Length: 477
Ligand code: HEM
Image (cartoon, rainbow, N blue to C red; front, side):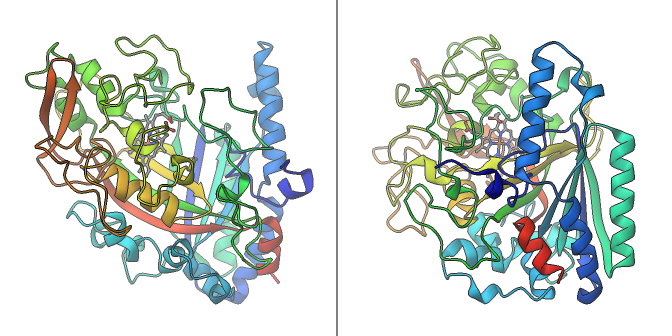
């Protein structure tokens, strides 16, 4: 199915198109006066970017840059995304009861903090009770998230100031704001642990360029936008208000970069051949710093960034370990990925996050105590089947994928049979108890090692609806 211009002009640009800007400011606000807030919504409905314009801009920008010209000075844009939580929609009078009773809609309505048990936000380091104050349970302060993205600092500042002024004037209070931005120098395009981010995104049928044969197949738009058939051929029965909208998952993930460097400096005890720090880091991530996959570049970072690979030819994970972040997060052609026997395509996400905070000095000999990490933002049609499933069933579960099949969909994978060590949790973004074990597999044998502690901590989070442009207008009426 081809996405028409008219459809794309009603879908927000933050999801299927992607802002691709150096800087991305997040403004979280509470609605104090719903009637006044409608005027703010009207303003936002005018300035919120649609998918058609963002995609058209991105293509033009790439075209100009491809010809070796300085695109930055020539074509410029500052984009706005408007996201509303369930509490915000309630205050604005939207009827959440008209949503079907499927798990994904239940999750959205409950909000992220209330889903802590399901997601795995249960360790003392991750519980919602210790999140940034406005995000804590019972606070009901996070109604709106406005995302403003630009390559130009002055333009971004101006747009942010204008939106904040409108918020103050129209019955809303800014409760938290933070700027994410591309890291400087050689860290450009990378996250704080030093790996290129954004190497793999799902391609959408009839919207993105068709993937090459060995790349993961294109997905129907219904996997990310409501009102269209998903990969199982199902269209959620939602009313007009929800059509052309998506859900967004926001997680503020604090990264312990010094801890990561200590972890990889230890290598893997008894590994043979022994792993140096750089190779250990790549084994944890599943890709090298350049973004090259361990499947296609098993021994050295040759900068070959591609998605033309699978894991079925490496069932034991001799190249990309089965515990590695990218293999757990998208197991591609791994057999036995899901109790419901659904293909991995049913659990994919569009990721639109950005790093926050300054990088840790390369020569640091101790942690500098600064808060740095990732504003994780993913865009999906079903928060439960996509985000919650991936976090809890794949990243957190030490027994996925080599453990026993879960007896019911609500339970995790069991330990592997026959004395096999489990592969262990995702050491980067998994949630696990201190001292958890991962298993590196080499032709010389299985070598278990301790993951010192969670290198990533959840410090805030919420689920949002990304309304269509038409729905934003309706909310303002
Ligand atoms: C601070 C925490 C995190 C870091 C440092 C991180 C880092 C990375 C890196 C370096 C990549 C490879 C490059 C790419 O394909 O974009 C990646 C891919 C990915 N990450 Fe994360 N990530 C984090 C959290 C998460 C979380 C919480 C999830 C989901 C619950 C997630 C899901 C994914 C997915 C789905 C991919 C693409 C895998 C593929 O298609 O091959 N990540 N991440």
